[in-house]
Length: 66
Image 1 (cartoon, helix red, strand yellow):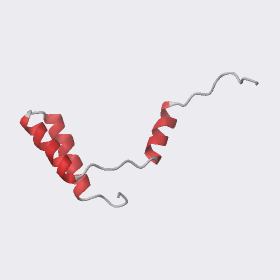
Image 2 (tube, rainbow, N blue to C red):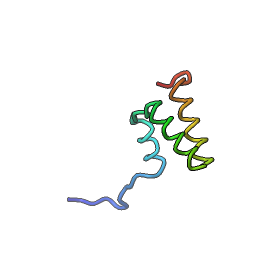
Image 3 (cartoon, rainbow, N blue to C red):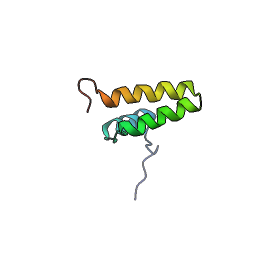
Image 4 (spheres, rainbow, N blue to C red):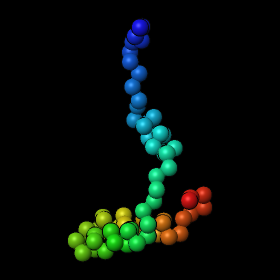
């Protein structure tokens, strides 16, 4: 067995590209609305903003998105 030096390791860019190629299921709109309500009850501004944007993207995907 011959070892090659240095041992190749995945880079951050390679890991991001691999994650982009894999299809991840989107959460349902009711689940996102529940997260939005939860963030609102906790007065979490950033959570509200993130959940609201996810709800809009899930309800009306842009061109090219599924």
